[in-house]
Length: 284
Image 1: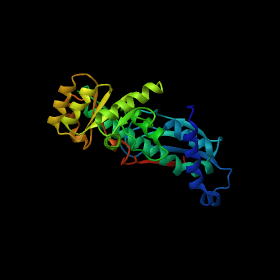
Image 2: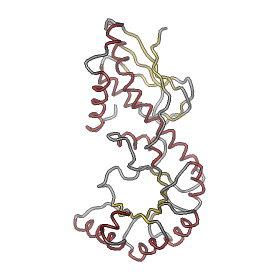
Image 3: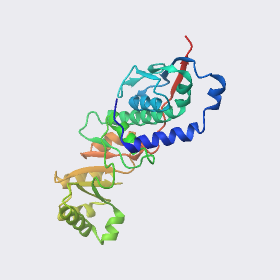
Image 4: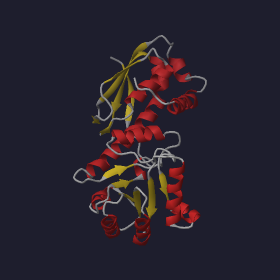
């Protein structure tokens, strides 16, 4: 059984509290509480499974008397009608946990499935897909876990993971070189191992970064394909390159063709469609 960090436990508790309230009155009215049986998690469409361990954890928060028997594991490919897992035990807590369990599982499967689609588009290239911090509030750990299950690579989890100098930081610092040197000095004073990344929107800005040096990554934001290709040529391996902005699955191969190391896409997590999964009581 996976050990979940406290903030994941907290959002699961919050989700169960907001869903169940003072009690599941419909289930309480229909079931006397002693009925036992089983229910099956069923996939309704093609996709990638993510969050199986979490589903079991959520069910156990409602009742430890329910057994979760997975038929599949995270990363497995799903097809319509495929049985994902079986829950056995008292039926009342199985039904009470249903909506919360599915809300988490469907979102994670949706993220893993979309990530897998993006990764497949880049199979013949050396470019890797990155997520962003555009995650559902409180769900970042799980959202990024789903990205990894789908074959993607995590960017920053939090603001303390990496320096990322963006347009407003540059304005506040008074220029690109000043912003870089301030971050470099801060890293040295505080003995941090965090990398330094800077966002540029033009080849002129990139030239300033190259002249200054120090950085580990450069984000090429909303550049044309020709500009990105020239940027990669000018960087010449000095630091890692990341393409960002106007990223769609249709453009992935063209962007990768510029030679960038990474492509980041907020759409992996910020507007994902939940996968269609059902929980059905087995009447056999």
